[in-house]
Image (tube, rainbow, N blue to C red; front, side, top):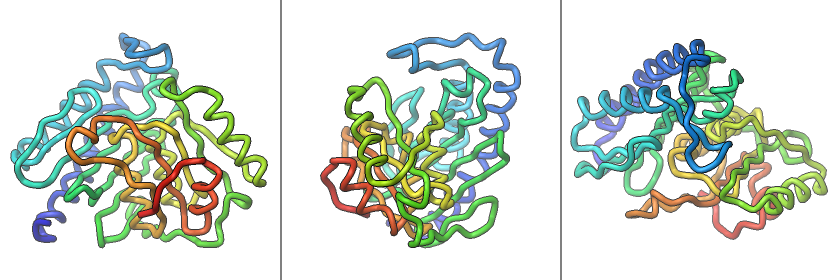
Length: 269
């Protein structure tokens, strides 16, 4: 991996860009009735000019500062780099919530190095919250250190469960049924990235979704790891980073139980 000072400069830039991108997205959100919304793969999978313009802003800022870095974004695709670093960006995670006037959406910026998420920044404009983490530097919420409490379990906390059209409804139903049978309860906001940030902040015991993309989860994974939690590794080598995969992460008191009830085979990171 490149020297720490290089990582620190990228981390600082990610925080700066997340703030700018969040402001642009919030401006669109306040004018959302004027947006033309397009359907991507289903009525629940939508996109607007807001998503595209926010990602364009992020990509332009990253390319200006670090032209040798790769960039993968939900809306504008994948450009490989030569530096060993790859940015993974979701300009607005939770677009359905966004276009319907709900505050549960966020800007997510992650950085991969050697197959590992080493920077994660999630900006939630409606709540004025910035979750930020760098490998070896800890995780923060608006500058305050995050450290997960191992006493938080599936039984004494809420757990985030996500789902989408890529997964049969019965799979989601089974995960929810297993969680309820284990004495837990669940929540779903419409933004997987935001719920992963909530895991890092200790607001949720964990989060599980049977199918997500890299841009939805990698920033949250970095946050959770640096806050003392664990996550199911996401395949990022080669073209695998373009495909979906199960996402599961939790604090130290809930990870093994969530992994067991999810039915997903894997090891923690």
